[in-house]
Length: 106
Image 1 (cartoon, rainbow, N blue to C red):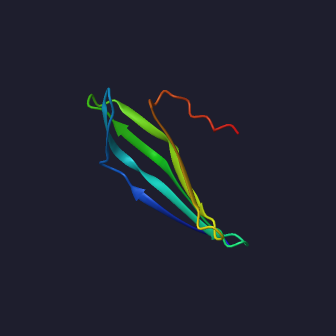
Image 2: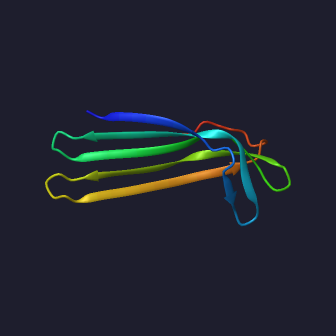
Image 3: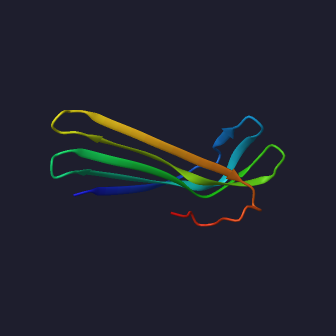
């Protein structure tokens, strides 16, 4: 049966150096969810997802930005062969307050 654990981390003070600006987090958290389980055939699986929550950042000029997106990492260990398959996806956007926040479409 799958097991899920979650945690929330304060990211205030984190710095994101980018090619055209450096962003400093003023407030917000990252919510992390870890799911682990074993299939009926014995394969062990996991996923780890990190999502920013109410993250507010500023650049060197004091302009305010938000952070949205997610990072996902997951894998499986095939019981019969010992083979491991891992994959990850990362997508974050630094957005201005003028950006309209729309729900993601399926």
